[in-house]
Every structure is written in C-alpha cells, then in structure tokens.
Length: 196
Image 1 (tube, one colour):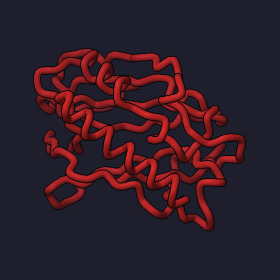
Image 2: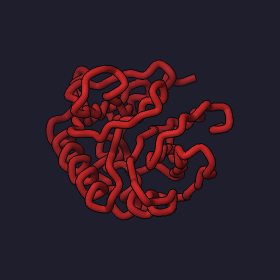
Image 3: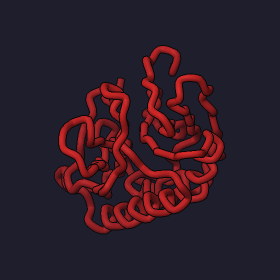
Image 4: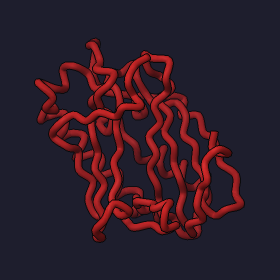
C-alpha cells in the first residue's frame, strides 16, 4: 500500500502507521503519526514505541480492540518500511469492558507545533469509542483525562529516547516538533471510517 503513496524525503523523520487489526468491522483503521529521530533507524523507533505506549492512550475503546501492527517508514527516500507485529498485549489495546462501540466516531488527538498554518498541525482520529465513554457527543471527562496524561507522558518519554513527536508536511517536505497534544472534549468523525 505504501508503494501507492508519493512519500516525501524529510531527513530524520519516520512515518509510523498504527493498524487497528483487532477491531469489529472489516475495514482496518490506520493512524499515522511521525517522529523526528536524528541518528536512529526504524527498529529504534519501534523499540521506543513499544516501550512507551500504555493502555490508557487507548482508554476510549474496548479491551478486545487494539493495534496489532506498526509499520515504520524512514522518510529518507531509500530505506524500506519495517512491519512490526505488536502481539496485542494489554498496552496496545483499549481499556473499556463490555460495551457497544460507535463505529463512525472517534476520539480526537490534536497535535500543535510552535508554528501557524495547516502544515504545522495534525490530528489523530482514535477509532471505536465505547458508548460508555461519551454522552451526547461529549467525551467522558475521566477517560479523557487519563488519555491526556498518558499521551503527554508518551510524548515526553519518546523525546527523552531521542524520538520527537512531530507534524510532517508532505507538501513542503518539512517537519515541526509537536509542542502540545490535546485529547479533545467533543467526539470527531472521519467520513472514511463510516461502516460499510
């Protein structure tokens, strides 16, 4: 699938695709985030990811739903993507018990940098929120707070390991480090995630 995309060359930046293979529908959601990791390789990026993700980052969805595959692609123009199976331990799965999910809605993680404009901000649409994690389209405060705490800790731990969460502009072949990541109060929708 990556062969169909025209990926830019951005020095020291890695594209990370998180594939939600454990999920209730036939269409696999994929979240894409980027890291600026000077002097690192794809294996280093995945090792740091696997060491620092937590179940609370996905607290909005069920314990039966999770990320089973992580593809790390160096944006250096020559290196191959590396596909990693997570094995889906608890840290790669949601935190909610038995409940129905909302297939067309998402929890939204907004990524901001110290620069203005669309090329310097990003969004991560985290799929399959549990119905118990929202009310009338507003996210549950305690779940949102737990997710915020762990996304902040994750970004800090990754930076300490030399992997800086960033927004990559494919249009300008550039990147900007994320200054804040915010789990939004309202649910979001992404039309490509509509059930079929």
